[in-house]
Amino acid sequence: MNHIAIVGAGLIGRVMAWQLLQAGQRVTLFDRDRIDGDEAAAYTAGGMISPLSEIEVLEPALLQLARQSLQLWPALVDSLGQEVDYHNHGSLIVSHPQDAAAHQRYLRQLQQHTDPAAAEYSWLNASQLSQQEPELLPGFQQAVFLPGESWVDPARLMPALAERILPLCEHWHSGCEVTAIEPHTVICGLDSHRFDLVIDCRGMGAREDLPGLRGVRGEVARFHAPDVRLTHLIRLMHPRYCLYIVPRANQRYLIGATQIESEDRGPVTVRSALELLSAVYSLHKGFAEARIEAFKTNLRPAMPDNQPLLSLQSGLMRINGLFRHGFMLAPAITTQALQQLQQQGYL
Ligand SMILES: Cc1cc2nc3c(=O)[nH]c(=O)nc-3n(C[C@H](O)[C@H](O)[C@H](O)COP(=O)(O)OP(=O)(O)OC[C@H]3O[C@@H](n4cnc5c(N)ncnc54)[C@H](O)[C@@H]3O)c2cc1C
Image 1 (cartoon, rainbow, N blue to C red):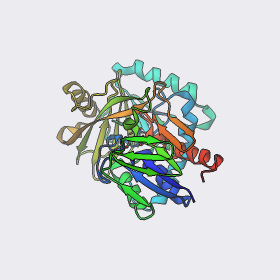
Image 2: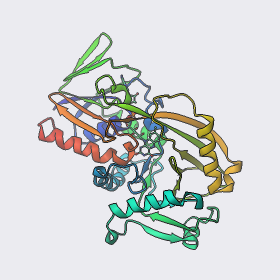
Image 3: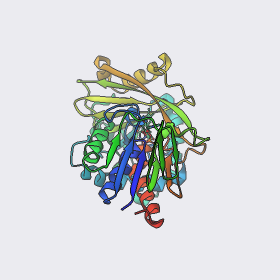
């Protein structure tokens, strides 16, 4: 049996490790963060698995992969055997009258990329919208409903994956900065570790080896809102960003996210905070009394074409560039990776 190293135990590294372990492989992980650390982009994410909501920012070539991934998520969640706050109640796309142009632009994209016979979306008038989500402020004349779109809480998923991986993996080198990766070899300072295969899942940490890789800044806010009960992913059309509210357990909500071409990981700016906060308040007045629990910033690892990178040369696989779609694509891209490894005789 081959011994496989996974470098970077963020989202893709953990999902890949779990898939390999389920397939009976020997796996060793390396990450510079603690196992319960929260530096990975994964921890800042909304955890949305929402291909059609993302249609304006999803490369058309990825839509099929994203649909496939949406179907694979329930099995991944089941395999973990614990609550990860996964829901598939669907998304609602709403817009204020002043953002009607953004809404129309979104609708054109949706119509272009969906088959009406597949019933992947439906229109809701104001009264149908208030049946689906009774607490949304009145004033939204129409909405688009995307049934089946789903989301997961990264703060629950990541520890759940670790809990499954730890008893089965050979070793998890946490707090271990990998200084170089070569085919078959992981180097941490003066230590060199040899494997049958190395899988590089370092996200932004792989920048030196992937010259085109860039970080795209995203900012989110987390709330505790005891007066708010929303049960869908809510997308609010906005001229600059795709703003969304993701419900979490215990009346927690995440609102995100800005998308800024910058690698600045510094704190959230006043402008971004104002935009995020005014967006939630415009959807539900109950957010006025909500407690802001955190503002978070992180970088989405992206290649120049914003498409994922999956490459395999002798002894070294790289999976990167998941951009704003890591959760949306994780089970599908790791399944593709496993297929490549099978074809090349590693599994
Ligand atoms: C604000 C924001 C919101 C997002 N929302 C969503 C969403 O709703 N849906 C969605 O699908 N995607 C979303 N994303 C994108 C998603 O988070 C990323 O696509 C995903 O996390 C990328 O996974 P990854 O494993 O490649 O990188 P990461 O999750 O960043 O993991 C990389 C890991 O590599 C480790 N590492 C790096 N360098 C080294 C080194 N030298 N040595 C050892 N370890 C190293 C890091 O510590 C980290 O654990 C969002 C991202 C952001 C920033």
